[in-house]
Image 1 (tube, rainbow, N blue to C red):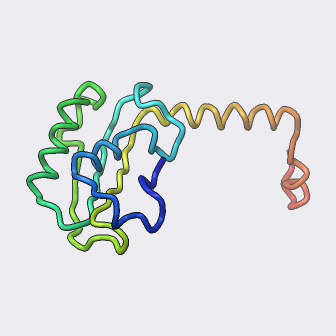
Image 2 (image 1 turned 30 degrees about the vertical axis):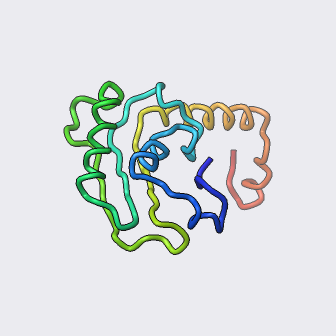
Image 3 (image 1 turned 90 degrees about the horizontal axis):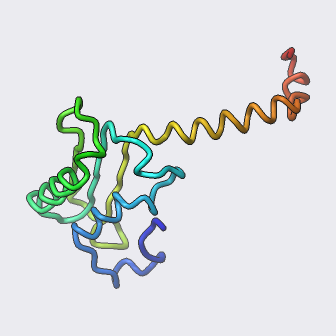
Length: 136
């Protein structure tokens, strides 16, 4: 679903910090196929661009941390960091970038490992490695 609007439409779309923050934390906009409920967040970073009030950003991040308190590990305090870059993007008033480390990524690596095991069992693509001098 990311980006939130079509290229060239940034001037017409008016986002708020709350909408932007909600979209950042929405699993529809994750780049990996993970379910938010399958794990716990270890840490997260919310980067905002635009002429935004620091207090408004801090309030929205605090709301997220309260709302998703059970989804964070307890042994890492203050595990959401936010930053504001005052220079807005060229085509819109504000934007946001979300990076998080979650234990739900385990499922992605398990799927890759299972697929690799199936392919290796069938000896698929091994000829490429043998051609480069690697043995079985």
